[in-house]
Image (cartoon, rainbow, N blue to C red; front, side, top):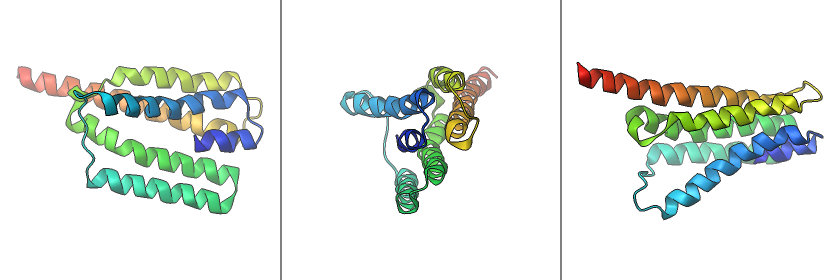
Length: 153
């Protein structure tokens, strides 16, 4: 959401919509999983550390008032916030669906249809989202296939 606001402040328009959706989607997942009694998640020390560093990155952006710094720190913040999901996907791949990240991959890729100026503000977060989506897809599904293969042996 921070990257969307920073991108909009530099004049980026429709290209920021997939970036917005990348933040909006996890908010919806969090809300739904909060009401789902069968949802598996537990906040641990690592989650708190990642969250604290993410908040510190947002504070640093607020202090600098620079949109490019905001986008860089939003990427750092999001990457840190994604670490617990990556760790959970590695430890318990059966609790995640890597193919859901295909939607994020597609959404981030659509940003490139609306880019007017190939600058940092327009391409940084979509490129990051593409890399993150591919990482999550291959990490979760690859780990699941590996563990299933190991059970067969």
